[in-house]
Structures are given as structure tokens and as C-alpha cells.
Image (cartoon, protein in one colour):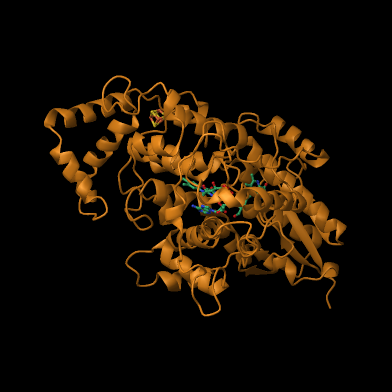
Length: 520
Ligand code: FAD
Ligand code: DLZ
Ligand code: SF4
């Protein structure tokens, strides 16, 4: 056997020993390469906590590998010869180690995968790119499923994944409990005194403290609070977070999935996306644990099925959808939305109490829960006609769990309807009523949710009708939306004019974000 090792670059969201490029290898002829690079830290100006999370998790993973006997070549951001890019660092590592081949697990993001696909031409040694089997559904499998379908309905895809994994299935191929989906039981508005148990918070250890100092020095101008930093950064912490979710929160996860309470940043959500996405937790194992909770009688089926659907349904579907539609997804703008993102998305300074609370949570934790991202922040961007590029950059920069493959379809296709309906059958548009029903935000808002137009009216009310009116040509033939236009047409002319005028006045009052928040 040659003494030349195999070089295995491991990216910041591939932090597991079960990774395709690691699991088949032997320790004595492998060099694992991990790289903190300027390009990744700055292609958008990520929230400070997101950079701390990734660098700290990478450093912890390198330590774990070394302890287990692997050879790890770890390039820190401040290493004096750091080239700043993945390709530059692999090139330097090839000079250092003279490997007989480079084995890498495919990147989760299109941008990075494009660069990797140039490596065989750039480098003298053989380069092997392995599929990322942490996802249940391969690119080819998703393409086969999508082939010939008029609409890519998530629910249909989800059922295939249930059958494929056997999760929540009976021995004779039926869904447990008789139904595939229990969403109808999962729309409880918040009640008083809900009191969700606190999510475990993790004190920074020495490694994390060092990274916090680095981020403070190098990325001080990025959005978001640096501290307190409390995310899990290694497998053991991520498992503690998962244990706490299955012991204390999953029971009520389903019913309150869409509920929002001012100041409650996690409700009954798992808060596990940051750990799943960078590789600290295995998504399938989490679904198996959820199913076990149902079998043990510690969580009801509607909660368990809801959680499993988010992971083997939505998460897998979003990833398949991304690879099916890239690179076009980035430039889709079927609704021709051109307005700049308002500055208050970065400062949180708005009288709209719902938005202010979601932005506060985003700023202080690099997190907002799903319904906040979808029905408050997303709904606002849709109704106000914010251009997709600004919205994509914002979501990608501000959330600790954000990577292009998951952020982009959620933003472009789910909230902005920028692909004209390949993902969503209708735009997720709602007036203030929806937010009032599902939250306690409106009670103490400066605006009145019951006021439809004019001074003091909740801006979501006129914006909703402004959106419907300006997209009538495209939307009125949609059978899920058409009847909304009958209501609009029944209103007297003055009322319709008041709605449009109020919305225009509100839109004119928005201050566009200054340049340089997300990208220079
Ligand atoms: P839970 O509510 O506990 O859900 C469990 C898990 O299901 C999550 O951890 C996540 O892995 C998965 N999941 C749920 N919904 C989705 C979804 N729509 N797409 C993919 N996975 C999902 N999630 C990200 O991981 N990264 C993102 O960048 C991201 N951007 C989003 C942008 C918008 C506009 C919207 C509407 C949603 C976005 N989501 C994103 C999905 C979802 O909001 C987060 O996964 C969730 O809030 C994470 O918190 P949690 O772990 O407590 O989730
Ligand atoms: C998000 C991120 C950041 C901020 N920094 C790094 C880094 O320095 N090195 C690294 O390997 N990964 C980083 N990441 C995550 C990557 O962007 C992510 O792994 C790839 O883009 C996946 O395609
Ligand atoms: Fe948001 Fe309108 Fe309710 Fe205020 S009144 S919290 S702006 S929905």
C-alpha cells in the first residue's frame, strides 16, 4: 500500500463521524482537513452567533476526532498562510500531505459544490465526491419523484418518505393511527399561562470563549448580539438538548406549533435545527426517538407526527426542491417584487409589535421559530413586495441554522411565491387577523388590529388587500384564492380606495436598509 494518505476535507456542516467520506476510512491512512476560511464567514455577513457556532462546533469536532485517533489538519482563520477559500486550502493541504486522493462528501450548497466540481481539473491527484447520505432522499430519487408531476406537493413526497423509512407505519403499510397527517389538531392559539419548560442553555467552554473573542475582533460589524452565546456546540450538548425536548416539550409541540407569545422565543419547538444542520444530530434518529415517545405513551400522535413531518417531510423536500431548481431559484421573481428591505429588519425599530418581537429574538439568539419566520416576517416581505434578493440575504445572514439549501427555497418559493407556485399552491398571505388569532402580539401593539384603514390601522390589513389587488391577474384563477376577489369586488369603491391609499402611505413611509448589512 502507498504511504500517501487520503485527504478528507470536512466542511463546517459535515461534523459527524458517520459522514460518507469518513465512515469507510481507516485512521492510519487518512488526513482529515478542516478549514476556517474567510470566504465562508463573509459571503454574507452572518450573525455573530452563527460564526461562533460553526467555528466552535468545528473545533470541538476536530478535538473529538483527534481523541479518537484520527489525524486532523485544522486550519484556523488567523493562520498566517490561510488563503481564505476552500479550494485554496485544499491546494495547500495537497502540498503539505501529498495525498494519493482527495475524498469529499458533496457540499450541501450549490455554490460550494460548483467549486468542488472543479477540483478534479485543478488538482493533480484523484478527487472523489461522495453523496451525502445523511439525507434520506438522494438527488436522483427526488428528481425521479418530481418527474412528470404537475405540482410537487410536499404531502405526497412525505408519504413516500414514511413508506421508505417505515416511520409511523404499521406492519401492513398503513399510517399509524389511520391518518397520514394530524395538522388539523395542531393549530391551537396560545393560551394564558402556557409556560413552556426552558430550553437547555450551554455555558461557553474554553474553546467557545476563544472563538467568541475571535468573532468579536474580526466580525464586530456583523448583525446580532454576540453574547450570551448558549447554543450546543458538540455532540454531547446537542444530545442533551434533544433529551430535554423529548422529555419535556414534544407533548405540546403539535398543538402549539403555530402559536406565538411575545418574549417566548422557543415555545414548544425543539430548537434542534442548528445541531441537525451542522451534523451534530442525526435527523432519522430524532424521528425514531419521536416515534418511540408515541409508543411509550409520553407524547400524542399529533405532536409526534407533526415533528416527524417537519423532518422527513419538509426538510427532505426542501433539500430536494433546492437541488432540482438550482441555480434558477436565486433569481426567481415572478411577482416582480422590487422594494428594498426596510432598515428596521436590521434594527428592530418598528412600532409593529409582532415584527419587533421576531426581530428582537433574531438579533439576540440568531433564531426565530417557524411561524414567526413564515407568517410575521415572511408575510410582511410578501405583502410589502420586498425584492427576493434582499430577503434571501437577510434570512441567510441572521439565522444560526441558515444554509443556502434550506433558507433559499423557504424564502424564495415558500414565503415570497417568487417561483409562481412550484412549491406553495397559494401565497402565504394573511392580514392582521391571522396574527391576532395565533399570538398575543396585537393586545399591546401601537396599531389596532381591528382597524382596517387610516391612521393607527394595523399595516397588515391594507397591505393584504394591496397585495391581492396588484397581483389579481396572476392569482384570481387560483381556485384556492379566487373567492377572495369576490369579497374585494363586493366592497364599495371608497373602501377599496381607502385600503390601497393606506397601504401606499405605509409603504412610502418605510426607510430602505442601508447597504452593507448583509453583503458589501
Ligand atoms: P421545530 O419546529 O422543532 O421543527 C423540527 C425540525 O424540522 C427543525 O429543526 C428543522 O430541521 C425541520 N424543519 C421544520 N420546518 C422546516 C422547513 N420549512 N424547512 C426545512 N426544515 C424544516 N430552517 C433551517 O433549518 N434553516 C433555515 O435557514 C431556515 N430558513 C427558513 C426561512 C423561512 C422563511 C421559513 C418559513 C422557514 C425556515 N426554516 C429554516 C424552517 C424552520 O423555520 C426552522 O427549521 C425552525 O424554525 C428551526 O427551529 P426548531 O429546530 O425549533 O424547529
Ligand atoms: C457557515 C460557515 C462559516 C461561517 N464558516 C465556515 C468555515 O470557515 N469553514 C467551513 O468549513 N464551513 C463554514 N461554514 C459552513 C459552510 O458555509 C458550509 O459547510 C458549506 O457552505 C456547505 O456547502
Ligand atoms: Fe402586528 Fe398588526 Fe398585531 Fe400590531 S396589530 S402586532 S402590527 S398584527
